Length: 274
Image (tube, rainbow, N blue to C red):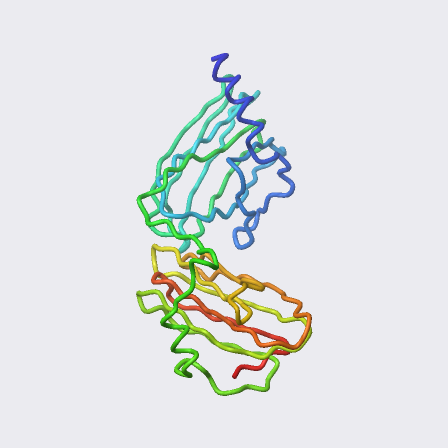
């Protein structure tokens, strides 16, 4: 028992702080789960705290610990998927001695989970933490700029096969859908001095992750700035700002990997496509 208490004390340093007043009690606006777990202390009333946990395909083990109390106390965990369907639940009951319960569940596609932690009016100290073991999936990363050059696509762009009509607008938006294979698009542009704003949103195919990038390079291939995301099967967005020092010719390179479902990017600033 002493070893167990010492282990819990050590674990407390790895858990999210116990400022329960900052935890959401609104299931539509949950607190983002961060770190290994949470420590809490009862507030003298029944309360339900909601957390959002971004989850990749994994096998989870949830631990719920209810500390000793002067009266019998209950601490419950309910886990819901992105569609609010129940995945798992368990309840620890503490009284003269603490109690710990565990429950296992599997997430087979990337999605945000909703965790509901219920404490009753008699609850004193409690903790909740998660162990996870990733399922076998192909890892996805954003490639380095030097790895991400498609010479065939670049020759096609130089020959005008990807070249869009000139646009005088200060805002340029484009996008599309994935094809199940890597795609590269190159666009030559003239940029005046000033700020150029990039916004990229992408979404992966179901149960996968996708790397999508928009690079701004000079004509010698030196990267000036990158806007990139590793997307799940919910939309993921990145925003970047580049301060172009003077008028010059540049090239926009859009890379879409094989797992992408759809993507959209917007470039705003003194940029004209050729």
